Image 1 (spheres, rainbow, N blue to C red):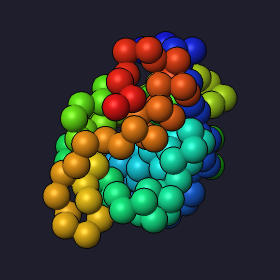
Image 2: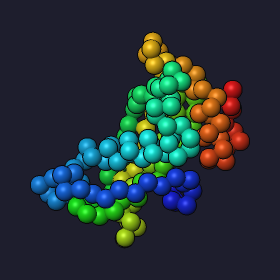
Image 3: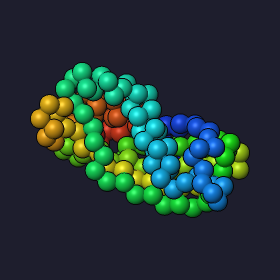
Image 4: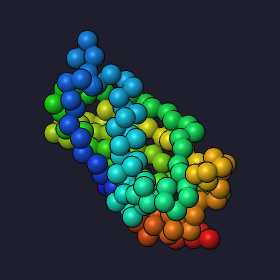
Length: 147
């Protein structure tokens, strides 16, 4: 998806410890970039993680996929574009594109699925209205129900 179709972008610089003996970002670290962008996205739309916990909810990842398209290297700045593309009953699905900022090459794509759970019982619950409303407003998505 073209990056101008994403409403959110997070930037991060590749640290030396995130690279491997080949001199490129070790594959598992892309999930760290995605996870960081997901938390930053939620904070940006007004749903910080600790607020979610105070309201009695938590968010857990249930699925993740990555497509590696080009290597990223130490000290490069990565732009992680993120969006919520689907909200189900208890699930939230996101997709991401990771670009190297200077060259604008796409280095990876990712898709993740999360489930909202009751913090105490650890059981899935319906995505709360305040999260639905925040995504609806941030993404300009009239198709997302608030109830």
